[in-house]
Image 1 (spheres, rainbow, N blue to C red):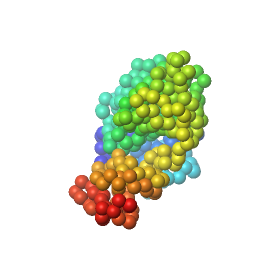
Image 2: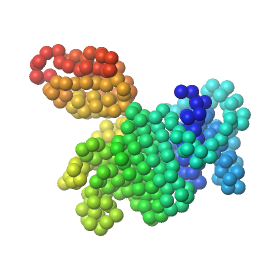
Image 3: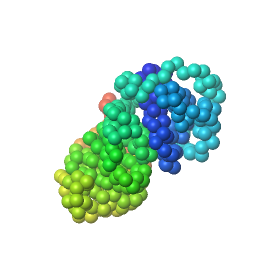
Image 4: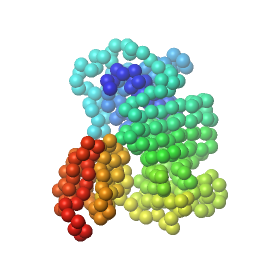
Length: 358
């Protein structure tokens, strides 16, 4: 799709509204600010829509925190940021000229949501009573192979992985993220008055100021902590009984909750593997081939099929872009005794011979 597509434009407007709301709540955390700058630098359209949201806010509310921001100011902010890995909006220079013209249209917050905005399969939907009030629910969904990252009104940052649905509800007493299915990572802003709780099936994870990953799978929930510490329970972390029966998980640790039962203790984990998806990568160290293949299948329509049980258990190590199926197929074909056949729907992985030692 082109950036001028109405649906994509509406989706960009919605994300711009999210960022604007986050700025109105208070100063962004260092992490959230880095994500904001990265988002700005991704496209001149992002700058245009952000300024448009600010203009609507000023007209509706008689003023706004960004009243003095201009296109040039935002461009300079993005250009002077040292964060790497994002396209430089200063090239080509001709793209700037379009920003100096009045935008073709502006959507208010509700209109953007009502348009059922869809950006490459990533959608959000607002149910709002009061944007800064006691009840707000927001649902995020990503399609197969898509990811998204959004600032939350409290300054936290939500990362949403492929094939995921999650709702966020903030009240005066709690911050709740409910994972219906899929995987998220959160960077939690400190709030002494409200705990930050992630609910996934029978599992609750409570944090005050930390970063952690929650992956709700059909048969279990996997939680990995990057920084700080969380308390995990399976009865609802707001009750005294749940707090007594909770399990502390610290940075560099992971737990898997199966059937609503906590494990005896957290175990060390390779955070590079656990968080590689945030950079759209798949990293694996001595992992069964079937597990790694399924990871690739999470992100791609071209899939890997492995029927042989011994081959499925073959331990492999490596690091790949999540969507680079061709490189992964070439890697598998380079292994002794492994054969990779390209089919219409993907790759069939088999053995050259029935030798069970491979």
